[in-house]
Length: 289
Length: 261
Image 1 (cartoon, each protein chain N blue to C red):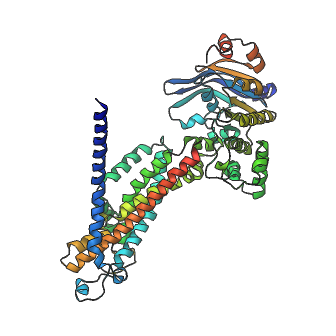
Image 2: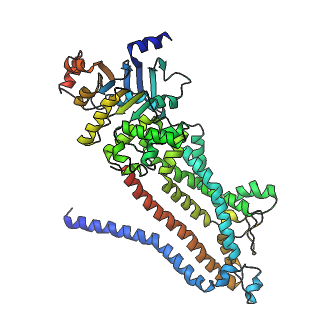
Image 3: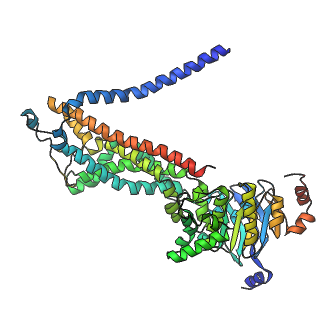
């Protein structure tokens, strides 16, 4: 092979990689662009302050908006986060720090299975665990479903973050006569806190965009509600209902809901992203000679 | 009981009896029986991979964390087997401290908190007590004068040699009876290494120390007793002067004169 040919091959590979990159990035840009163009017109002050109400509201020109979906999303997502973080962290610690524990192998299998479980089935799980016994749809049931969605993601990211903390840190703690739980709590977890936060935020962003697990748990409604034991609305699910409705002005509001959801999820991802870079740099500074 | 008494009488602080460590089917170190004398330094020497570090780590049960490692035989601390059923490894490690090859300060903690970490764990919360022990330990590790004005700064801001002395101070703070050192100077520059050596020399007057070293001169300078390991076997144990000048074993002589290793 001549030098010329090698150069050619090199350029070919770079071109293929570039195409792959474009294929990955293009849909994202198209989604953002399309959603913004279609939905921007429906964004207004009322959109963030009024509840949706019945379809006639908009038709008759009365103010209508999605404040109830935005508030509901924040409540349900935060409640889910609150429930998922301790369980997810605990499971991650078990996976990483106690490999010899008899519960470790089954936990690993369960976490992987739950990770690959279709979101709608997770909704069904919460439906049978919470909605059926309580006899009503509730934001709480929706939060439980989202928490089940987050737990395996948090557990897995926690495990991988803890795995990259240096082994010597554990030995140094143990050699001092610290019991293992103490080493984990006061040395390992603090040393990896930035990575733990990042993993949690990624799980959070993932759950925040889900509609399927909420369909028959938090159910959704058209009016503002802050009682977590009643049906509550969320943006992803509202987007879906608006889109399949027969009203033009609701379709427009659906696009606007898309913008809000995009901004919400992307800002979480972005924060996680920045935190990750910081974390990597920080780890290098700490542990490299 | 009689065993304890004879040990005290002969000044033996720790004694291994046919101590072996296996990693799965592989031999780490085989059938080692040596005494560790009180308030003296014992050096473990030998070529890389000879099992000296493996042996050292068996003395404070650090192998417990490695699932595939199995330890057989006995390691008697004041006549009591640290591997006996019902012995808590945490208690053993509090009595037998360790300093590692690379300095391992706790990265998220300040200089003060690094030294105080072991004390907090045994429930000491009183500010004055902590301060007193931290100062005493840092002085014991010959680091106090360099850090006394910045105890609140992160331990990672220290130089490598200072970090290693910090680790020694941290180990001293919990008042161990025996201090294990795994090549404590090998990752340091000559000046820092010399200061650590000086420190070890001082410590051995009041503390029983066991040091793994690749540096033959270091063993000669520091240790009253030396054990020579080769491919998982203890070849020879004796007083350092005798072992270096007139080894009983041919393999020791060859190693010391640079025939191999």
